[in-house]
Image 1 (tube, rainbow, N blue to C red):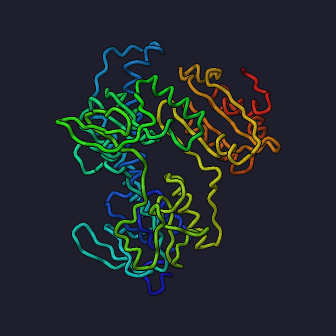
Image 2 (image 1 turned 90 degrees about the horizontal axis):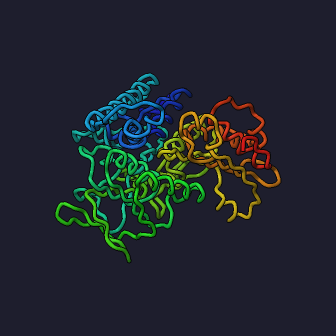
Image 3 (image 1 turned 90 degrees about the vertical axis):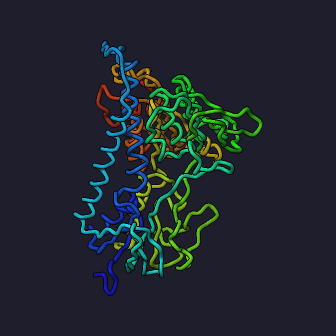
Length: 465
């Protein structure tokens, strides 16, 4: 029961972490309320992030396939015409279906939805101000902050400038930019850069580091760079952006020690930062760290006993599936005292073509830690299914402990890498060795056989190469 409060649990934010936490709490018998500033639930991921970008990646890939790749299969479709309006409409339809689905899940689980901006009054009271300015005070025994993140920027780069965009605007261009400059060579920049390159833009990626995909295995990133460059993306690495300014109808990206880059539009994709604006955390004595994150303990509890935080607002990986895991674990810890997130086996996927996926530690991390490891590697060029579907670029790389053979990391670039990594994440969660995966029977012909062969190769026993 909610005692004298409106709810046992109030969740602030209806993104993947928040709405999943609300569902799990309802399943465990709690009276749940959930607050979101948008009427369409699902947060950044469903509305303007993961889902719409993946819809555009799929559509743009089909467009490019129809124009170039289908002839390889003996299919000649003649001239191909882009209908960008229809493509964007399809993307919006996918988003609409999924956000409505989250709304139905809230209704099914009897979670009361409040639309508006949330602000703490005290540890058990939140003021919710709706779009019309009306404020309602909602009380709860416990509150979970799951307000997510927002795009970050750089000094000298004003996101409010015309033609300077974040990922939110870059999924909704009404015309294909002639030249799109992307600041940032991480997954957001490479994915959206790929979309508009396929649809006809000249795309230049400007990255501060000497490589793309910082944080991912260096060998994987090197291969991705090579493949994306071959596809037509242009790269300006080791480039420190000092500012962006208009010049007529163009935008100029200024670089420290390098020539400026001129483009029609600029996409700023330098990461994201926690969204805690307006929460009035100071009213309850919760402070953020120097990066804007809310510190929590192993139970996701903040410095206030009744207030918890999950997802992008805490210092863990800013991934939708991490937020979901944390939402479930947080609620289970509150209700049952148990709950766990397998942080050592969190997969990450980049939805370029080919896809890039990773789980566990990289070679660089193992070297830095002084961990002795063995490598197993298998190319998709030697995989029968990859040949059949004409997608043979890339490889699977498995890193295993030299003495115990326990899998420490798996890194894949190739067809359906995002799906293949799930087997590896499951195996690592249960402490599997590379031999465990290799000896599991994998159907033939499938792409997953490349994972099996890479695991066999850890001990030099690869079969089909």
